[in-house]
Length: 99
Image (cartoon, rainbow, N blue to C red):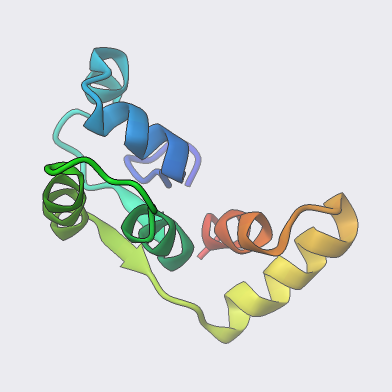
């Protein structure tokens, strides 16, 4: 993804963006965000959402390219987890960058 308009957003960055972070909004601009299906699940499973949280998240997700699990991501996530000792969800998200 280096040197292109492609980028992968993590859950925390999306939460900052949804809370009005202008710096992140400026960096993203009008580009289409890429996210992992893990990030989608994390955003939608928040246990104490505000009244507008879920609708804002769903609207944001409609603007994203969501990468689903596939064999290449599985193998890369396993390698990342073994090498860097990350939690499995973080390893999957990291593996999504290369797809």
